[in-house]
Structures are given as C-alpha cells and as structure tokens.
Amino acid sequence: MKNLRSTVLALGITALLLVSCAKGQTENTATQATSTQATDATPAATATTTAPATATSQASPATSNDKIGQPFANTVKITVMNSKPEIEDALEAGAKAFGSEYNVSIEIYETDSPGNTLAERYAAGDAPTIGIMDIANIRDLAAEKLVDLSDQPWADVGGRTMGAVRDGKIYGMPLTVEGMCLIYNKTAIEKTTGHAFDPTKYTSLDAFSSLLKELQAGGMKYPMVLNAEDWSIGQKGYQFVYDYQDGTAAGAISFLKNVHDGKTSFSENTVFNKVYDAFDLFIADNINHEDPLAADYDLNANYVADGEAAFWLNGTWAWPDFAPYAQEGSEYGICAFPLNDEPATQGKVVAGATKFAAVDKIDASEDQQKAAEMFLNWLVFSDEGQDTLVNKCGIVTAFKNIKLQPNNPFNIGLKHYIDEGMVIDGATYMPSDHRSLLAANMQAYMVGKMTRADIASKLDAYWKSHTPTE
Image 1 (cartoon, rainbow, N blue to C red):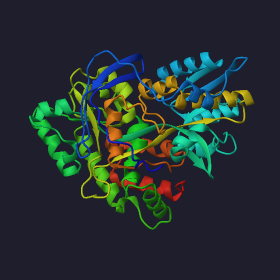
Image 2: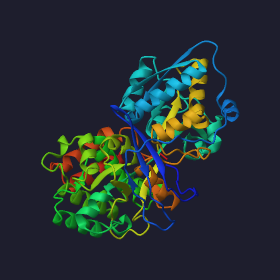
Image 3: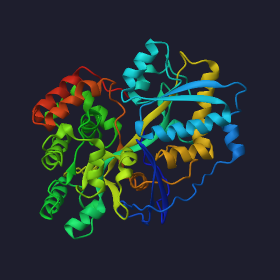
Image 4: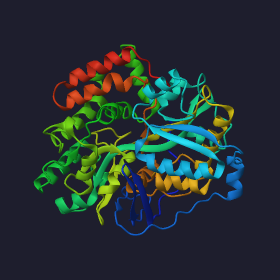
C-alpha cells in the first residue's frame, strides 16, 4: 500500500453536491455545508434532498483526446470484470458513454470473488479484457498475464505512486482510494447525549467505551453495528491488527515476518490484543447481537442512517449502500478505530488504493487491449470519465489532475484525514488465500465459537506458512 500522506489542499467546502449511486437505485443527492479549518475535527456532512448542481472538471477536449485516442472504425467488443459491485450502475453508464463516442462495446459482469473468477475465466480462455481486482490478484497474474501499463498517461498523474507496481512495472491502475474506519451518525449521537460530538475526543478505547455507555444511558441500547460478511468482519477485521502495528506497511510486514520466523506470536502482540479489546466491546454492543451472522448489510446501513445506532465498523466504500437511507438534515462522518495508548497511530484512519484496473494480454486482441487502455484514460482525462468516477461512483481518486471534490460525507471525511496527514498505510501484502483461509474464524469469534487465543493460534499458523508479499 502506498503512503497517502499527500499535500492536497485542506477542504474549504461550503456547499458540495452529493450524488451517489447504489445497488438497486440510480441516484441519491445531498449537500454538504460544513466549513473546516486545518485543525478542526473531521467534518460530518448534512444530508438533504436538494437538486443537484452541475459537476465541473478541469479536462479540456483537446487534452482528453490527446490522452485517450481516436474512435475505432469498426466496433471493438471488450469485457470488464467488476469486483466492486456498489459502482456497477455508474460504471455501466460510463462504459456506455465511452462506447458511444469511441465505438467500443463494453460488457460488464460482477463478482465478489475476483480470484476465483479470474482463475475460471483464464482456464476457459475467456479472461476479462479489464479486470477490476485486488492487489493480491495483480501479484498472482502480473507479468505473465497482464499488460504492462507503465507507459499510460495516467501513470504520470498519480498512477505510478498508488498503482500496482511489480518489478518496476505498473500492472494495475489505482481505481479507488478508500478508508477503513467507523462510520457515525453525528446527529443521532448529539441528540442522544445532549452535547456536541467531536470524534477526535474519542480516539482511545477508554473514551469510546464511555461514549457508548453514555449513548446507552440515553436510550440507544445497542450503539454499534457489525457486518456479518467474511470480507468485512473477517478479512478487513484482521487488517486493523496489521495496519496499526506502527502505521506503515514496512512495520506490518516486519511483524508478520517475525511471526513467520517464530520470533513472536499474535497472542504476545500488544496491538493484536488492543484491537481485540475493541472487537469485544463492539460485539457486546452490536445491534445484531441476537444473531450476528444473520446481519443484513443494507439493514445495517439503515440502522446508522436513521439513528437507531451510532457507529458502523466499515469503510468509505459504504456510501452507495448507505445513501438510500440517509435522512435529510442528518450529519454523517467517519472516525478512527479506537485504541488505547498508541500515540503513533491513535486517531488515524487506515487508507490506501484498494481496487486496481488491469488489462489482459493472454486472451485479448491488440484492438481489445487498446480499447481497454483508452477506456481507463477516458476515466481519468475526460469530463465525463471524471464525473463517472467522482460523482457517479463516489470514488476518491489517486489522480492529481482530477479537481472534482469528494461528493459524499464519507469521502469528504477521508480527504480531510488525508489532508491532515492522519492516515496510516492499508494492507497490500496479504497472500490471495488470506480471506479464504482465515476470514471465517472471525465470524466464529463473533458468535463465541472461537476464543481470542484460538484466533491468535490460527493467525500464527497461517503466517508461519506464508510470507507477506511486499
């Protein structure tokens, strides 16, 4: 994961249009009316139902044509494997707009298991022309099956810094910059406690625990929301342990290599135990406590959106699913995972590029590869492409030429943390079988079928047989 401590200008937002997309719906709008200073707490945003304003972009037609290329004389058909389902509708619309202009027919199909889908497609000789995939998938395929994208125009405007680079070559365009965090309903918290909520005052687990008790005393019996999905509570749950070692990828890899070499263990690790102290608190106060593994993702979003609960352990990618339930006049935001006595990382949000777009070189023809590269450049350099990424998909991008501001409360909050240097490196060093071999254990922990010692033992065993991939 690349370091995100960028020097992007501080948010001076007084009115931002929010347009989002979500599974099963087309659009939802809101405006953000929070002005921030450099030392202010992370801003929350107010949801309304006002009409959208017109998005603006910095790309000029001449510049975008130079970067993208010319339309094909005959229609070129390509496929896109999308492993980020919440952007499916917006991506479809963007692909249609690009295809009409450049004579490219794009078929998009969705998967929640990119590794398995890629293996099946390559075995069948039908690999996606563009694969939206995880860094582990890039590591598995790079050089042998993916096009070297190092010469693409987007590489010079942030693509190389945050892209998937192997042996000095770029095999994946960074598609999304996302944060793992707690999502909160500021309006509900303040209504329940009777005082202003400043997330920077609750970065320690002790302070956060006190706030939960205060919320419960005010009538919010279960203030926390946890997901049941293995990719969420399992795969990403473990990442908090890795990412908060010292806040750097190098620090996390060093710890994991020491586990691999038998020099230490998870049960002895201070951060592991602090993260699980937090998990224990979250599980006890989970609104889905009666049957945690039956939790419904959309219902979880609704719990926090309408103020029945205050906090949702999730990430900034959740806005498209959250937006349909956002209440007019309610303020929402993101804050850090709470830990006691970790001055190097406490109060910081995990962030980094989480999805990458790669181009196949095995099954795709020369024209198909060219069309795929043109579509990726269209997303970065054209007005419509940038609007697709930022406004329609609700993505924080890695590209410095894109001047559109984030358009939803979660991304506004993430950009604030980035601007303030309050982010730590997200994990990119996990082998591709990490989720399939480990994530279910965390689900078992949620329902009391595994202990903390069991989890530590499973993690020790996994990393003794795997080496973190840099």
